[in-house]
Structures are given as C-alpha cells and as structure tokens.
Length: 219
Image 1 (tube, rainbow, N blue to C red):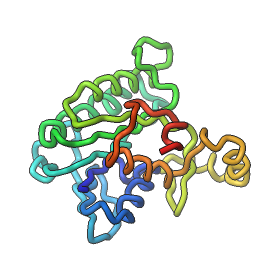
Image 2: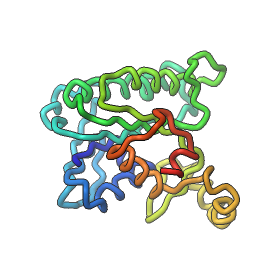
Image 3: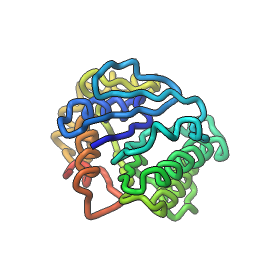
Image 4: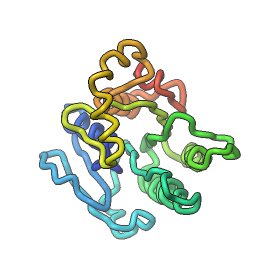
C-alpha cells in the first residue's frame, strides 16, 4: 500500500507517520506539507510545497497512491470564521478534489473532531466548518472516505504537539492519564492506536463513514 500523509509534523500526523513507517504492508510513504518532517527512512518521500490550495506543480508526484491520511488544520483560537474556513475547509477540499481526480481508487481518511456539526447550522463556529468539510469530503468520488472524530488523544513514542498550550496540558495530565484510560478505555486513545486504526480503515474499511472515539478504539 502506498500512502500520503498531510499534517505529518503535527501531533496526530507524527503518530500516523510512525505507524506507516513501521508497517510492513506499507511500501511507500509520501508526506505533503509546507515543512519537512526531517525524518530519514527508505520508504519515506517528502514533498515540501508552500501553497496547498494549488497542487498543480506537484501533481505528478501524487499519482498511484492508495490512501490519504489527512490531519492538517488550524485551531479556531483567534481566527474569524472566514480565516478558519480557508484553512480547514477550502484548503482541505482543494487537496481532496485534486487527489480524487488523480487517484479515484483512493481511500481518504480525515481527522475531524468530537462535536463536529454536520447540520452546518449550529452555534459553534469550528463545529459548523468541520461539519461542512465532512459533508463535502463524503460527496467526492473516492473509493471510500472516512471522517474520524477522536476526543482526547494521548501522544506516545516521543510524539509532541506543536501547540504550546497542548504541550502544557499533556505535561500536567500525564500522571493521571493511566487512571483516566482505565476508567474510560473507549473515550481516550493514543497516537499509536489512532495510526493503527487509520491503516486498518485504509485496508479493510468499516461499517460507518463517520467514526467517533469508540469506533476508533474498536478498530
């Protein structure tokens, strides 16, 4: 299986990249983003491209891919709805539409979030935008598309969030995470579990196209 990862320098993307590089069934891993991961591996090919709204210059490097793991996005903090939508809706759709055209047999897996509003009419701005993104992705002519809505994600194996606030949160909560995990085993997942679940989705599919934390944990 040849896979593409967007957001490979973020916390979720780092975890997915690790699992893809370790998986013997993955033959090629391509990362696409504005910065490189700076990792070295025989299976890894990195594409650094500044404008993800226009992939025409790198389209020839995005052909022959079986799956896309998309975990790229921005926090809503400090952004207007238009600014947030440009990153989390317009850019996501620009990438996805290009990939659907180049790789119609692709499985597209998008990391959304718990509380996403697919009615697109709710009061929470980020949830409306994420819901609009999910709806649009599910309409594209991929072989299959899955929307993942994880809740609390625990970083493992040296994976770190790029967001300072999240790093502080995980530092404070680390002593309590084993207890929380024992009490709520299907409400909390690790970056390792999430990466493995995404690989399994790409290979075998699932009965639902929108997966909450319990579905991800089950996978």
